[in-house]
Amino acid sequence: METKEFYDKTAEKYDSRHTNYMLSYMRKAEEELIKKYVFGKTLDIGCGTGHHLNLVNAIGLDVSLPMLNEAKNKNCTKLVQGSAEDLPFPDKSFDTILCIFTVLNLCDINKAVNEMKRVLKTDGRIIISVTSVWERGNKMLKKKLFRNPQPCRKKMRIEGFRLNFHAFTKEEFISLFRDFKKEYFKGIFIVQNPWWGWHREFSKWEKIKLRADKFQFLNSAARVYLAVFRKTQ
Image 1 (tube, one colour):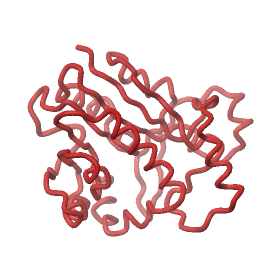
Image 2 (cartoon, rainbow, N blue to C red):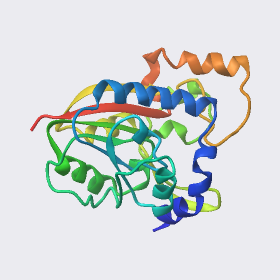
Image 3 (cartoon, rainbow, N blue to C red):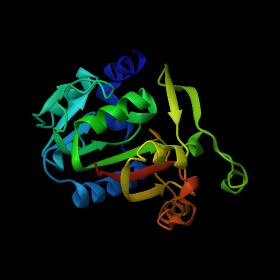
């Protein structure tokens, strides 16, 4: 499994690769959702090195044992190795599920969503984010607005690994949870690129553009979607 191998071999560098001004902005948005919507018994699918586990008393699940070991070094104790497509838990086990940042982009989408539905209790919530089709390139936003984006399946190269990556349109993302009630939706990185893994200081102009993302009039063209869905039956 190339995704598992990628995370196994890059676990020690994961936190440093995801530490910059842009990612801090995204983490803040995630943390606001977690504080507002998490309740009861919680599962963090794709917990990685445990960033969110220190915010909420959750069980962390990840396909990569080295990533879980990094989480353990942060004093996270409720850790399980497993995949999003085959969750090792009984039906209706959790009140809240976290699935943050590219988990759905890199796995079997339908299997993962069905498993989330299975282990979530009625009236439970899923707090989830995905990377969108707008992250495919760096063309001007104005040009993007005049075309109809389609779901994008491609091979993405990261640190020498070629990963199967699925980027979502807003409509496709929401339709995966059509049996749920949508309680929250936001697009971020609308006028600014997130610069994944790019370590540098940011100019005043770049920070202004980043803060402009708070105005969500163009969130369908955002590079990352954050959402909360509630299971109604």
